Image (cartoon, rainbow, N blue to C red; front, side):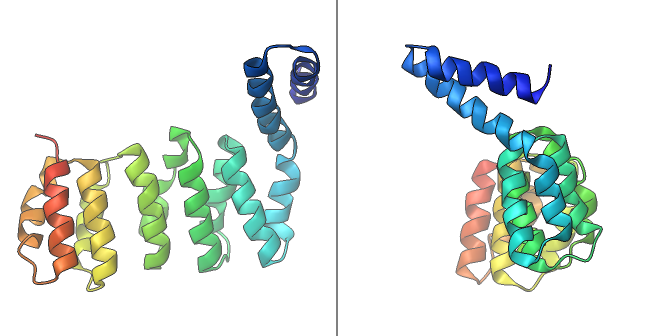
Amino acid sequence: MGLEERKKVLMEIIDKSGDEELRRAAAESLNKVEGKMSLPLVIDNLRHGDKVIRLQAIYSLGKIGGEKAINALYSLWSVDSDVDERAAAARALSEIDDPRSMKFFWKVFQLEKEKVVKVELFQLLKKWKDRRGTGILLKELSSRDADYLIELIRVLGKLGDPRVEPYLIKLAGSRHRGIKMAAVEALGELDA
């Protein structure tokens, strides 16, 4: 049994079932199975395609999901990929509804230098509320980039870790309205 067998069963249900809801569920599952069947080709495109093909492969991996897709996306931080590809990979990882998508997160976050990619990585953190790296995030508060700080503060709030309270209280006194607003809102998100 394997993907071909799953595909055959799902196609039979789509063709023969009179239950519209069941047919719709089978069609959605068939999409996922066909995505998994194309995984080797998508990964090959990620490794050997031009930039447009690689970006398409990245977005496809986000839709396909699963451990092989997650590993392929994280591999972009170990090869010579550009900022657009890493940002797309971060976005794709946040679309995968699987806690394994956090597998290499903290390692990658610390390696990443581009703030635009880190902001995309924040979405993954918000989704899974992983507090293990709160200390790493607190070091990022030294940034002078206001837009980056605002996103970082929002993530700290979503994580809900009460250890960040003193930092948020200090930021709530900022002269920058956006930073102040983000800190005030984040204070309300923290766990008791």
